[in-house]
Image (cartoon, rainbow, N blue to C red; front, side, top):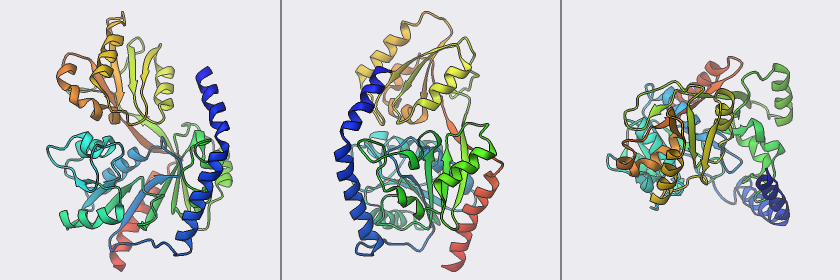
Length: 357
């Protein structure tokens, strides 16, 4: 509690830097809006899943949702920046690729969907032609976290905003979490309010839509988080978490609040080791995890981590062999029965694009 209060107070002190940051992104957006800087389109459907903030809105699960929706209908590929990787430039994931080469989120996509090409590249404008050269039969590219990268013009922009930290109530870095102008939301065709409580009322839905103030033609959807059953890191065997199971939660993600809330609601208690977002685990980190786990006196105990963290822990696979390390996946659950409407919107966009190009 004290550390959170200190952090908020410290960020308020950085307000002058937020004004400077706002000025920089306002000038940049103005240059694109007036065509002084050009956005380039491509002759195939580009679908962008992004946000206005620094993370934690559920972009990776949304990319996975789109992959599962589209992979059996079209030849798709994903393109990410590859944040926190140890390489630069364009790269296409292969059989021997590791997370340090392409980043944790692209590695997660590659592991879950081995038949879907997964590429990374800081400059999407350069990376897209390279991806099409490597995979010339690609029909659709999913752009992960590219909403603010305006050099490339996506045909369908899906903007995610966290129910607990709507972009309308946020402020610019470093005082807040916004990395793009609030009014940039108008460039999105679809806005999804993520991580909603499951029992959100129709009245609150209407209030949030009024607050967001969608432009003509914009569609707004609401999703909650749905957790899958934890699966063993090595054997992939799934289990049901029991109330009396002692859990050591290990996370290095932007927003661990939802998984903490889930554990608080369904379990007697848990311990937690929290690392920074995209943290690259060291052997000392693993030793600390093992030390904390061994200190738990209960016999029914597990280590629980996220999919994104799991790909960064793979290098310790030999040490993990005898450890009950379980991975929990999340997915978007559309509320108000509007999942099929969202699906149809995405598929119609692709089919209409292909029909007219």
